[in-house]
Image: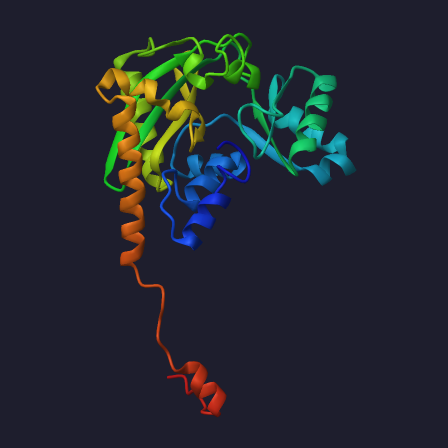
Length: 282
């Protein structure tokens, strides 16, 4: 499942209530991973490099677009990416190189979400992705990949329909391992593992990065990545069947851990209140 009401913590919360094991991240990690605005705030709090950005509400744009435009031009400057705070697979994302395109991108984004992220666009960006698999203390970053896009960023069509016969992310042209230095590879893998731990992730996630010359920026985390990013683990000796086995194991372990916790607390405070006993604070 991708996007709202599947990848954003809603289904995960339902599984928690029903006491059903599931292989994706938990409720918090899923929710943070879907909301680009909250996600960037968490990354910044971790000291990770992110692109400059601002955000606004749909109501602000509808009521006073000139103020939003002025703030974006002053704070970010062109070119900019305009993104719905939620959703995924590049849906609703537009690149603005001038005021007219910015207005159009804002209208599109506002049709998908009530909160909109406005972010500096990198000229000639290089995208690097790194997956991570595990649960609790077991964390295994994957090899890094460099996807080859047709446009300046991977659109929905690039990811799921072009040249791949509907085979998803696996069908995209890519270089594995990514043609970057060993030092940059290690840095990205460490960032990925740190994010996995901070968001209390489970199963397989993929973190996407943007390279601008020698500077790396954390772009976003995908908590249910396309094709489970299995193609990044196969060269490491982890076949798809073994990866699926691990996902099932992590789901079972997480449910077992949940069942070890107590969720009830015995107290006679209500009985005392009903009987009229006065509670004295010490």
